[in-house]
Length: 257
Image 1 (cartoon, one colour):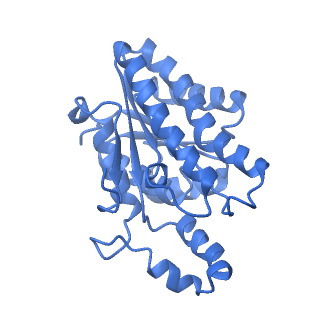
Image 2 (cartoon, rainbow, N blue to C red):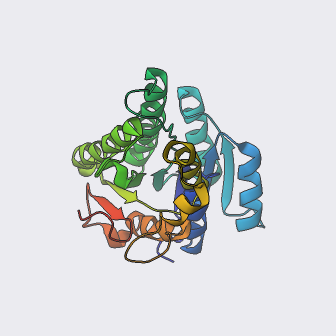
């Protein structure tokens, strides 16, 4: 129970990795503030993972809105008294070739994946500074290190998250806020399945076959969302105090650095 009674805000809690994050954090004793655009889905997940409703709070919100971010932070602090951790997990991807990608889609992905993560970190970080510190984990991707075809904007946005992580870790260390990132790859989520669906007509291979080939090489399977959550839970804990400003590959060895 490394996170016993600590309060952690998780963005994108209704998504595939988001559910794994919430489950792992609850297993480690945390109280979790779940936020996403889909309030109804949040409520369903919370009822499943925390039937008594004592250790979760669901707050719908749009992270492109400063007003919604302020409401999320205020609701978390109001319900649990403080915020000890933040997991910036909310993300978006639009598949397209670099020749055909639309600038609006490029902007949307950078806004959701980088700008919103910074805005959440800033708002929560101010609370942490007032209360003696805390920990932030940004969910980047191995795409931000290696890059993959047909997702130039997503690759660039996740590289931006990696750089943001280093910047915040250095600047906020004096106020006892530790910042790290994880770089998943090959996680068994609806987003990965959607990538396979997009590729099907473009490469002439059935999406199920494509998805089957997206297993992590060394493991021979896909990574499960809760496995990502367990690494994040560790990084939020006191056991990770000496890990600072890092973007850790958690893709089963597919990325060599």
